[in-house]
Amino acid sequence: MCDDQGRPVRLHLTAGQVSDFKGADVLLADLPDETEEVIGDRGYDSNKIRQSLAGRNIITCIPPKKNRKSKPSYDWHLYKKRHLIENMFAKLKDWRRVATRYDRCAHTFMSAIHIAASVIFYLKE
Image 1 (cartoon, rainbow, N blue to C red):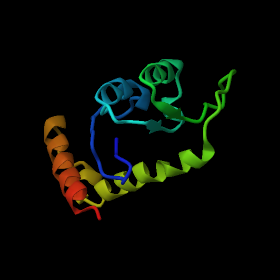
Image 2: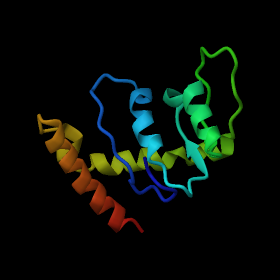
Image 3: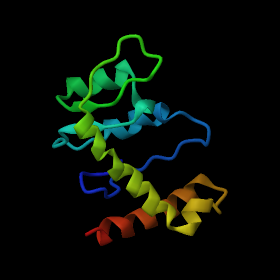
C-alpha cells in the first residue's frame, strides 16, 4: 500500500501463488482514519472489500472483474492514479536483493523490503 505521493506505507508478504485478495484484509484493516479513497486493481474486486470500505465512508475505485455479473461503476479518472503503486513496486525492484529474492526466509526477505521501502519513503521528493 502506498500513500498519495507513491511512498510505501504498508507492506504485507503473502505466499508466491496467492491471490491479492487474501492479503487485502490485513492491509485494509490498518488504514489511517484520514483515508478518503482506495484504488485497487481487479484482483481486489469483491463485495466484501467494497462493503467494508463503504462502511467506513471510504470511496472505492476498483474496476469490476470481467466475469462479474453486476458490474459496479468506478471513476476512471481516479483509477489513473493507480500508476503510483506500480511505480512504488518498480522502485522496490530497483533493489537487486528484493527483485531477485535472494533470501529464503520470509522474515529476512521482509527485512530487506522494509529497508528498501524506508529509503524510498524518505528520499521521495
